[in-house]
Length: 295
Image 1 (cartoon, rainbow, N blue to C red):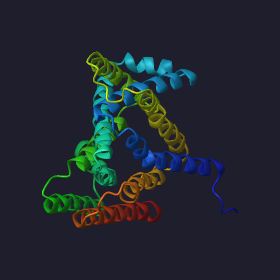
Image 2: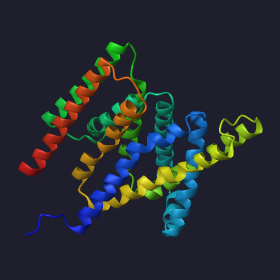
Image 3: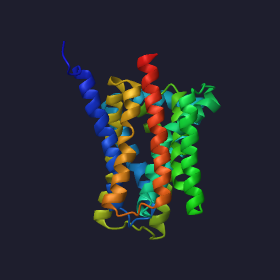
C-alpha cells in the first residue's frame, strides 16, 4: 500500500494548481497595461486569444470540431451568448485591476460557486440541501452588509460572479468541450475587436501606441490560453470536488495581491463581507465533503 497519489492524480493536481495559480496572478499582467484603456485591452485580448487558439486547434487537429460547431445554428447561438458573457466578465475584471478595485474582483470570484449553485436551482431544478441554503444566505448577507456600510452596490463583484456563473451554466448544457468553445467564442469576438481597433487606428486614438505596449497587448493571447490548457489537463484527471476546492486558489491570490502588492485598503465593511463569504464557503465545502464521504 502506498500513500502517494497515482501519477495521473499527481499530474492533475499540479496542472490544477498551475491553472488556478496563474489565474490568481493574472492581475499582475493587467496591471502592466493599466495605462491602456480597458476596452482597448479587451479588444486585443479577444483578438490575440483567438489567434493563439486557432493555431492550437490546428496543431491538435481540432479544426473539424470547430467547423461542426459553426454549422450548428443552435450551438452557435448559445456560444454567441457565452461570448458576450465572457467579454463582459473580462472587461469588468480588467477595469477592476486598473481602477484599483481588485478586492471587489476577489470577492466576486469567491462568491461565484455559490451563485452557480443558486442558478442550478433556478434553471436546472436542482434541489438545495440545508447547508447549501445556509451558505447562499450567508453569502447574500455579506453582499448586503457591504452595500449597506459602503453606501453602494458592489457592482464589480456581482457582475463578475453572475456573468461567470451564467457562462458556466450555459457551458454545462452545451455538448462542446472547453477549447473548441473558447475558440468559437473568441472567434465571434474577433470581428468586433478588429472593427474597434480599426476605428481607433483611423482616429489615431490608440492609448497603447508604442511597440512595447503592443508587445504586452499581444501577450494577452498566451496569458489567456495557457491557464486554460492547464485547466483542461486537470479537469480530465481530477474529481470535480477536487477542482471545486482548487478554484479558491484564484480569488485568494487576487486578494493577497490586492492587499500586499497593490496596496488597496481593506476596510471594516470589506472585512465583514469577506468574513461572511469565507464562512459560507467553509460551510458549503464541509457539507459537500461530508455528503460525499459519509453518505
